[in-house]
Image 1 (tube, one colour):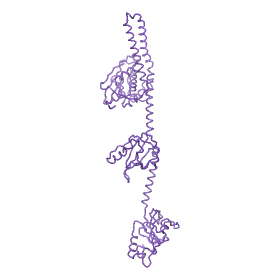
Image 2 (image 1 turned 135 degrees about the vertical axis):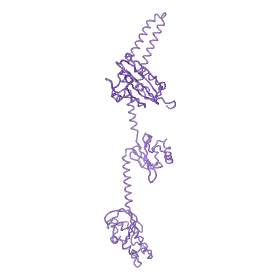
Image 3 (image 1 turned 180 degrees about the horizontal axis):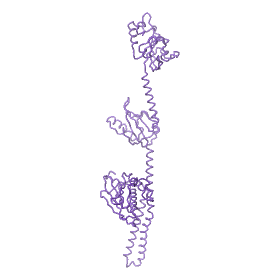
Image 4 (image 1 turned 135 degrees about the horizontal axis):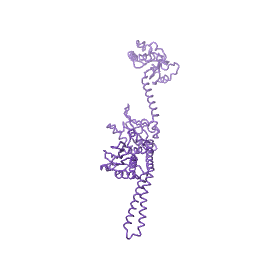
Length: 517
C-alpha cells in the first residue's frame, strides 16, 4: 500500500499534499499511520474533484480493491457508481460543514452494501478547502436488522389489521401501545385516538379506578388474576354503551419493559344466541306440556264429568228433600256437603291443569318435594282408575326440598308417570312406585313400573329426540325431560326394573342452606 509504505511522502514539508493543516513532520506521520490502520471503516482523502489520493486498510477490505486501483479513482464510482452525478454532499462540505448521510456503495465485484458516510472538508494553509476526508462505515447488518424490524412491524400491522378478535397491547403503566383494526370496529375508537391513553378508557366507569391497582399489584406480587386466564368482563365503547366480552391476556418482555397483549372477543351475539336458544327451549317445553294435555283430553273430560254429574245428582236429591226438611234435615245437609266436595274436586282438577299448561316465567325456587310429587301424580294419574294401577310412595325424609322450577319438574314427572302407565297396559301386575332418596348434594327421584320393560338396544337412544317406544309417539317427551333435568344441573337415565318393568331416575339439586340461595 503506497501511502502506508511511505506515509511521510504524503505529508512532506516541501510539498504538503492537499494543503493539509500545518503540523510538524512527526505529527503528520503519526496521523497517516493512524488513518492507514483504522480497520473498522474506510478512510479516503480526495482532492476537490473527487480523485482519491489516499486510502487506508479499511477501505481496501471494505471495497475489496487493491491499493493501486483505489488511488486515482473517482470517489463517485464507489459511492454512487456514476461519476457524472452531481455531488450535492461535496458542495455542502465546501461550506466547511461536515456532512453525514447514508447511501449504497459499490465493491469491485459490483456487489452493493449499505454505508454511513461522513465528509469533512480539509482546509489548506489559506484556510480554504483543498480536499475532502471520507469516513465510510459498513452498516449492512444494521440496515438488514432495520429492514427485518420494519418487515416485522409491517407483519404485525397486517396481523393487527386482519386478526378477527380485537387486540390491544399495553405497557406496564397501562398505556395503550397498539390497537388492532378489529378493536377499532369493536370500540369505535381510531388507533390514533387511544395510543398513549390509559387502557381503562375501554372499561365501565366503576371499573376504571381499580384497573391501575390491578397492574401495580401484579408487578409487585406476581399474583395473576387475568393474565394467562380467560375471563368474562364488561367493556365500554366510545359511545358509552357497554357490552360483555371474553378477555385473554398474555405477557411478554421487550427492550422497553413488560408489555401485555389483550385478546378480546365480543360476546353480545353469543349471549343473544344463547338467550334465543333458551327462549326456544322454553317454547318447546311449553308446547310439549300442551301436547301432553291434548293426549289426556278425552280421559280428563270423562274424569271431570264424574264430579260434575255427582254434583247435579246431589243437588237434585237435596231439592227433592226440601219439602221433608222438617223431619229429614240431616240428609239434606249430607247431600249438600257431598255436592260441595265434588265441586272442590272438579275445581282442583281444573286448577292443576291450568297451572301445568300455563307458560309463566322459568324461575327456580326452594320447593317442598313431597307436595310437588303428589300434585304431579294426581294430575298424571287422572283417568287411570280403570287400569287398576296401584301407586306406592317411598319418600326419604332427608330429601325434603329441592331448588328447581316447580312446573318444569312436574312436567318431567307427569311424562314419566304417563309413560309408566302406558307401559303397564295389559300387564298382570300394575304397580307404580315413586321414590326419593338423598344422594350427596342431589336428590334422586325414581319412577318404577311393572310393565313390559325396555330392550337393551333401546336404552342408549331413549332420551334422543324423535326416539320413541310407542307406536303413535313423537319421541319428544323424554328428550325434553332430559333438557329440563340437565338445565337444573342433574341427569336422567333409565334401567330395567329389579323384577320386571323399567325404572327411570333423575336427580335435582337440594335446596341450598338458608342464606345461601
